[in-house]
Length: 152
Image 1 (cartoon, helix red, strand yellow):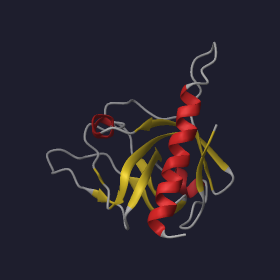
Image 2 (cartoon, one colour):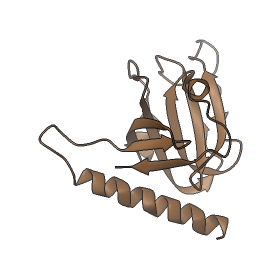
Image 3 (tube, helix red, strand yellow):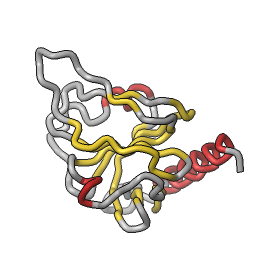
Image 4 (spheres, rainbow, N blue to C red):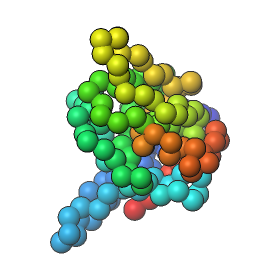
């Protein structure tokens, strides 16, 4: 299968899963999607899939639990660029394409004013990005090529 077709297939499968989850709210509230990494690590995620939500990201949030993350969805595969504006805790950034981890930027530090905010870029084009607590990628022994999928 061509890379562009695989990317669309992964994106469509992810979108279908997220739509199904949106309709499966229980009395206790909506269920959060779960990203399964390397077939062993489960991460409950908040999904951001619009320009406004992606711009906000984790800015201003106090923390993330050890098994939580934020999943950024993009319409097309491209070199993605992130910064740490208004962040209150360090993170790991996991770059994903075609259901595989294609890059890991570990231990991204808090911004240090008055210095300019550095940009963190994906090593290759990707269309899904996962942010988790700093050190998680190391604790979970994530590596390039590991599978990344969304589950109900």
